Length: 410
Image (cartoon, rainbow, N blue to C red; front, side, top):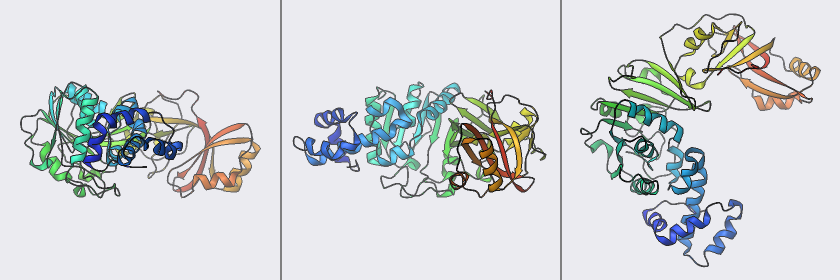
């Protein structure tokens, strides 16, 4: 319904009447929002009710990233969209704490999600953003979570902040249109892929990083590898199989490898440090197919996983690994392959009907086939299941049929 887009509305939420409204809205059914708004407006100002309903909606959205903390926190639309998932922020904070970092300047802090994780790791944080509303939310979040003693929020242009007294710098530049200089309060725009179009630009963030003993720069996982500085360790992080971000690490302490690429998989925390291996040659599809985690692919570490499982590529341009034996690895999902067939929808439909396949997981890589459209054409029916992988093998469009490994690698 309403949204919190101005300081007056936000400040009203922090007052006793606003707090009572937010408490009353926790757990309310969004489907009854109109009736709820009508009822609440009998006793409260309409703008305050609208702001409270907007904040309640943002909290519901933020639960996916912040869990139960979201119900005590305060958000802006951009804040929900751009905040780091707690599992990822916690991992980063713990890595910084392990380096001995005890004070840190969080530049472009937004609503303070990263600052919260850093403070919980025992790090004193200066959180900086030029957006007044984001700063107000960050202060309120630090207070709500009992971390105000460790988090100082400062409204300022991050490019003008002196960070020389801090052990480390963390920079999370704006990577969407419609924001600037550390998270403007405008509506979210489209994603920005050119690192120099970040706000502030990646080149400025790298310069700031080099002035501190340690630094971590959060960037888009699709960053071109040629844009990565030679003196940074680049880490791609996935959570639950979804690639969330890339981080550039600067410093000479233990655990940072300048020039190296790393893939880290959460929540388990498995971390693969690249060994600059050449890509394995392609070969015929064997009994097992490995689908590397997205962080492994983004980090260009498919060859490292192939070496671990004694595998080869099915095609020089496709990030699928095949092998004749099953080797446990946390960095890829394994499938047992039963059929390797040239792409043909009619043949696939007949084969699945013959096998009474009613459930099919359809995956694709290097194929123009749309899984949803293919599923409609197959008209699946029966008690059995199958995994169908549409891809290329030695340059030819191919269908691989199989199922997940009976004992998934772990």
